[in-house]
Length: 178
Image 1 (cartoon, helix red, strand yellow):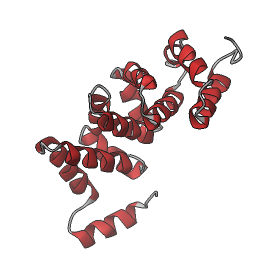
Image 2 (cartoon, rainbow, N blue to C red; image 1 turned 135 degrees about the horizontal axis):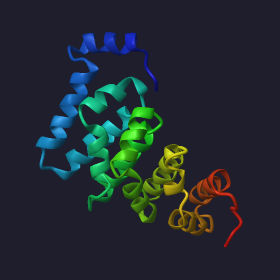
Image 3 (cartoon, rainbow, N blue to C red; image 1 turned 45 degrees about the vertical axis):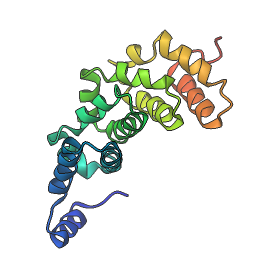
Image 4 (spheres, helix red, strand yellow; image 1 turned 30 degrees about the vertical axis):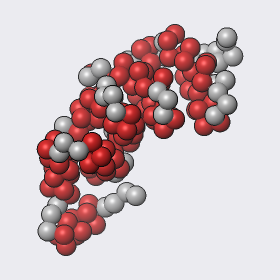
């Protein structure tokens, strides 16, 4: 749910902690805890906060975009899932998009297309679609990714199949190629 700045400030005053301080506490908890379950929970919360554009400046100041990118190379499947979800939620913002593109995001996200986790793959496809700009299109609509989408469009999973088809139809010149 998107919030207004006034609503966020009012809610922060009631709790005694503003949104930035709350997000900062989450990042600190993620960094300080050794418990994998707690890290996953915090990462999921950060990914949810990445959905609201009012949080973008705060998340950038706290280097959460980089945290999400870093999670894509983790062995823990839940870290990858929520890192990918966070990137998907915030990549429509021009500043965030450019940061992702300049910091190896396409390669990291492309690696998530082969995940066994359906949500990770769906978020990876969606994020790649959102990251397409005139400058990044050739890197995103490359043979490797097109081949992956061609395989996914044959999936028995309708969510994966439909999203791969959308990618091919919207971004590729000949979606019917084999």
